[in-house]
Amino acid sequence: MDTKSQMIEIATNLFQQKGYKGVGVNEILKVCNITKGALYHHFPNGKEELLIACLKNMDEAITTDIEVIFERCQTTMEALHAMIEKLVANLDREGTITGYTFSSIVSEMASLSEPVRNACSDLYTKMQGIYSKKLVADGFSKETAHSIALMMTATIEGGIMLCLTRKTSEPLKIISQGLPNLLKGFI
Amino acid sequence: MDTKSQMIEIATNLFQQKGYKGVGVNEILKVCNITKGALYHHFPNGKEELLIACLKNMDEAITTDIEVIFERCQTTMEALHAMIEKLVANLDREGTITGYTFSSIVSEMASLSEPVRNACSDLYTKMQGIYSKKLVADGFSKETAHSIALMMTATIEGGIMLCLTRKTSEPLKIISQGLPNLLKGFI
DNA sequence: GTCTATAAGCAGATAGAC
DNA sequence: GTCTATCTGCTTATAGAC
Image 1 (spheres, rainbow over the protein chains, first blue to last red):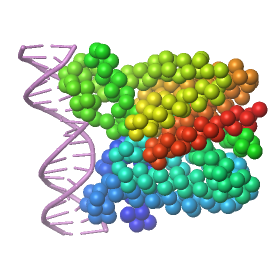
Image 2 (cartoon, rainbow over the protein chains, first blue to last red):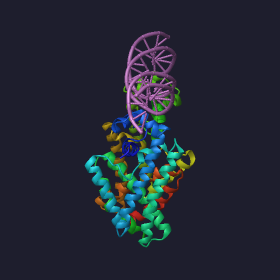
Image 3 (tube, chains in turn cyan, purple, green, orange):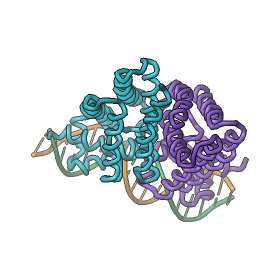
Image 4 (tube, chains in turn blue, purple, yellow, orange):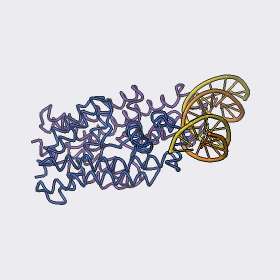
């Protein structure tokens, strides 16, 4: 793997875990085992340019990851269970969550950088779109599907937050069990 | 109002909006119109001690604010609608959300400081407890109430995140409309 | 394309005057 | 209890050698 891809891969993980300001450029360089020269060669605008590249990288990850799960599974609920199971396994194994979330980036950058805010907004919209499409296939109307998809996105993002705060995967497990009731309520 | 209380009040708002690392000590001092000497007189352990004081302040705000709403309203749903309405009004008026949320603090501090993580965990538990108590009064079993309360906490926190990302209060409005269906599904 | 060395600035924190 | 002045260390970013 080339240096640039490796940098994006590592920085993506670090940003997801500690947020943008929480990670110093030096920390990224140290983990990558490269120096400043290399960073500013690949990303002339420095740290923020690297962050944007990371958000694009997450976009691709979502496309090639969540979409596969949603295509493979029969119903929305099946797919969501599989997705949450992956998050839970990740959390139990590594102690942090590194996929399908960027709350730390949103909360500190939304009010500071429009390009970053827009990239995050696109990502949420994309996830919501995948859920929504599947819900329509499940038989829900377009509008109802839109509402449910938004609530799912919010619930999962909030659930991740609760897991990180409590240092257990319990909240996401309870959410996984409870989500079918959300759909049931909309029928 | 004395200097210390004013500092906590202002810092609470700033931390909620920009996260812990996103706010510099100098910024807080400038808004408060005081100097370093005053800060380190009141909070010898500096910025982190101020953050803990802010989290305690939020705890009180929840007690004197959310609890009042939940006592005044007949059902859980009524109370939640009132609560979300307050958040939406806050967002539409000021462009940011300053109440009932600390996601920005959680996401960057959970892995770095145990005291902060614990304080945040307590706050979520407190909110969830208020919801849960009301749900039991509504007729749900203790276990079901616990699950629903957790999902509500997650959904609202995630909804706030979506609002900040999209720069509209739409997500929270849709969640407010959709939450009754969550309860319906659990019956 | 990656290195070293260094700049310029801001972070949080401290000491001591008043 | 609040001020000013100052310190140390870390931040991002740049310049120029290889």
